[in-house]
Length: 167
Image 1 (cartoon, one colour):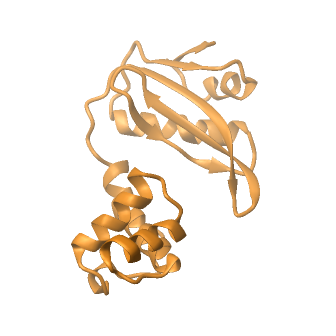
Image 2 (image 1 turned 135 degrees about the vertical axis):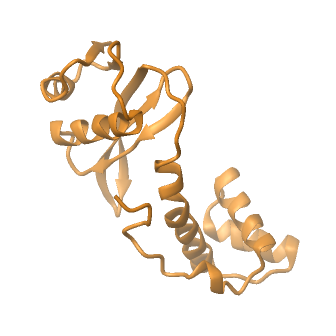
């Protein structure tokens, strides 16, 4: 599997009209402080004197996210043998979808986060499989803690030698 993102960004980061420092400020306001793109643009203008559109901010954010995603997904974390998972609903393009996420319960590292329009077993299996791929070798006492959703009981049939604790 290639570490390159399958999606290409609208903006080429090597050809930005702003300096790396300015990009860092934009991302700090957007990501660290969770400000909307329009407020970030207003702050950039009012405080830093940089005139930039909210759409450019969204494009920069997307380009950085697509560039960094493979490095985050394939980083060789030292993981434990205890994982938690759950699903929640989010709006994507104005429609409700489900975000399945699994993380290392000891190290507090998010390992899997697929999004699906359905709350189904196939996506639960995909989310768990993304965790198993990061482990390399599956430990004998591997534990997943999940809620009582039946999709995880079905997923367990596809994952031999794995214990699921339903909470």
